[in-house]
Image (cartoon, rainbow, N blue to C red; front, side, top):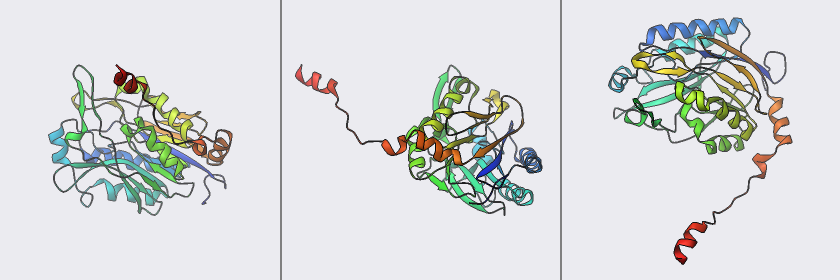
Length: 290
């Protein structure tokens, strides 16, 4: 393992909590400045939220503005920013145009040479009706991914996920059982669901897996009345909060001690104690008897 901030399996990380607008260029410039600042503060791993370089709430406009991976202006800008700063970077996600017209909600892991190490397409589309007037249908424009991704880093293996994936605990158990030490969950949680569930779900995923969870988040008021919750969160494998970004646009720093992963899993070895089982559906038997 490569060393982190103090010569061991420790690394200072930074979540970039931002309020993304509708156009690429201002968001890209802001992220590049923040990456540089975080490196100056000693961060070795910097993470951006979901839809880091554009939140366009109008579906038709989001499709029209989206770029292919080869043509996306954020990729060369952000990978170069990572290279210059000498940091690993998680680009939480970008909207990538696919053949056929739909988009991928794609997360990128970039090393400190500016090379893309891994890509992950969000598995689960956010199709919900939260309350009157607050409706989301990601599947109208987003093509869901088909595979989980476990990526190497100097400090441990990273299980890559995005936002709504958070509500599917089996994904995280599977990543942890495959060897993940760190789970990344870049998000743009709505204010409604964030207030209700964000902290509880993130702490639960850390406890269930014995992994560090890093969840950089969008915060603020976006176009067309879209509101995101913020509270970028870093949680240790025991479920303790390392850092909480609260509200506002700013970097959120925390230090991970990767030795805590094995220590937590020795204390609660649930990843190795899981048993296969079947469901004895007594309702079916009762209905048949009647």
